[in-house]
Image (cartoon, rainbow, N blue to C red; front, side):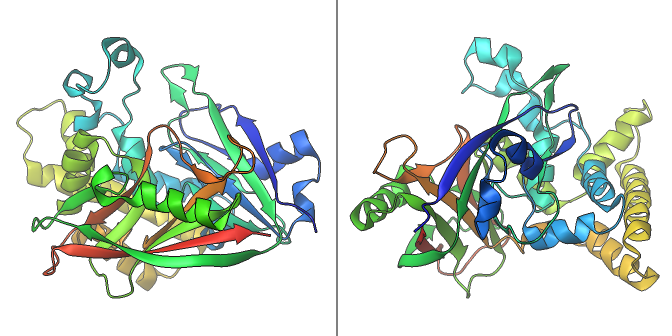
Length: 355
């Protein structure tokens, strides 16, 4: 039996927003080693760079500039330097002074990552030809390229080992982001126990909202208080909040009427959406429906399809003993935009082993 193959690929971003073919980079380093497997797991340890699920990536790469214009839609919605609380480094008390001096201001990249449907861990069928795009939304810190890596795991099949559920207490507040890594919930210790007791050395954990859960989503990102409790909350209340702020500053008029700024942001978003629709060849009626969702309803529309996240399980650090592999700043996060009467959310946990 062929064992799963795991390897790390170095990635060198060329611009702040960059798209690179991780599959081609892996081939340059490892030849066709991964092509002999039926599937390949692509894992990013970063919170502003990741992958699209294969079905979405296939649709975005089927036509010319569709991917570029799709990303442009979210860059319009979350422009750089639009007054994000996350970027006010003087308020980031968790950062040591030395780190504060070099910390990137990238609130826009975090929000675009979550809204655009990027994921930290995705599985691709290797029989399907074509690139596997590593999408970096914050590849440069000033003029300096950031160090980026991605992990690939080739495997032929996977089998479910165990399934369980966890209950996550949530507040009665309509908008809330909950760090599932918080020790109060016991998720990390529970996962470690399951992985150890079942002897999984290569596999993945899938966290998925229970079927009955509504008005909530899951993502993997940085759980930084200003980002989650202020910037993300603002977007959930008003998806054009930051686009309007950028428009207001562009006029160099601090007295600019907020309503006019929102209208300007809508116009800018419409232009970006028009370019995307032209590339995809969608009809005007579908364009109108897309725009209605984008500019007239809460940003929950952008997040509600993200009901599950995957986490890599690997023994790369301690051979023979698997553990969840996460980036330094990564955490699974539950986001709700309406409260639940029960005061808790149910998350299904599935541990699988790669064969």
